[in-house]
Length: 289
Image (tube, rainbow, N blue to C red):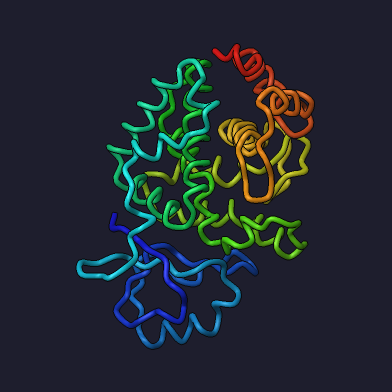
């Protein structure tokens, strides 16, 4: 899989190749598939419909492209140094970090998608790595071996790359329309990953990671065991990392308080069985493992 980078619509030129598919936000229909070569007609189509789409264009990089590589100039090991200190301190985290490294190193498609996330926003990449590592730790504690579940945990927020970053990192309260836009990211990530055949059978967790046990989530308001197992795991771990991590709009929550919140929402937002397993593993900040 070739590398991709983002451009504004005004910078689109004939001959460029679309690296990621482009979906309309109005009905989630596919406007342009990955691999489409831009020509005059396609660019005209984009100018007509781009207002209904989310995010900038992701273009396939070719030899000789002059682009800003500042955000892409990283190694996986250097990024893992940015993991939340709580994650790094979890017993068994080293083995899980090594697993995540090996998965990224052996899967060029996974690596390229992580590059795209990093180009979009480094903090989103760090969050993705936190969720991937914590998913690996959690599954290991349950003696579940599922490398595809870990890969999809790493890519659960890929769809955010199609959401304007000023909405994702907005310091104030988002408007109703902005929140509606943000909620599209799980669908957008799902549809983007469907273009990769080897991932096709493992994508339900990406689509459903914001569904909630009581049916209050999105995009399809699924409830209970109608939500796939991986999505129920991602929902809890995604929330945990969001709480304990610093964001432009919030300070980090203490790990102990985050655990209390998750336990309080057991059977409401989160699968009670998964929450129980989580609590047995994560008994306070200093008793993890």
